[in-house]
Image (cartoon, chains in turn orange, green):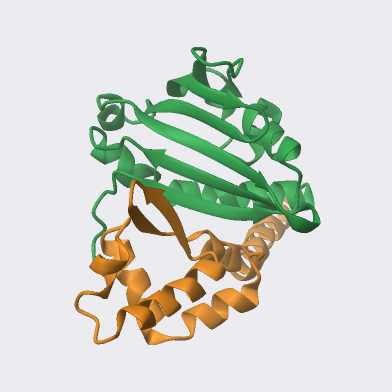
Length: 107
Length: 151
């Protein structure tokens, strides 16, 4: 498993999985039992969705005694942001730098 | 948007195309932390019981202090953490940061950061939540491309 963008996009392309991430954002570290409450879905169904999120690196699990806790990991989404949004930021920065050079030269 | 409750344990993870030794160096050497950790310079001997300090780029301000709890080069580093860059977080109790580095297939290692014991540091918990995401993506970019992030 790597932080392959395909896995992240595939994992996010499902409303139930996005809902699970929203619930972890509200309160992180939930167990499977806590996550399945309020969802119209079998325990097995929720487990399958969590597995997809875990494979994409969007959820990280930690064991504490007999309990398995699920944590929202936003880093893969940040990496997508870095890959796409930073390109626009760089352009804006260089435009400003060009403008500065131009103004200083004409001054 | 729903507001986020400050979490007493936070876990962040990233895969990096680098060896555990390279990742260890990036965490423990100031010339590296300066490039992805808000310009900070890490300062410690990284042996259990030693102080852990993180300085502002010009060393005029101590941004974070703590004590090394565990150091197993290059797979595990654990230290306490108190953020001094903000009056409110500076008044809180120490929390703990643990770095776990696992070697994997094809030269890719998994880096996990666990920030816990945040029960007595709710402001810190809220403050670092977005920060770790930024730091870990910056660390990955630096190790894989040799360049710091533009943003």
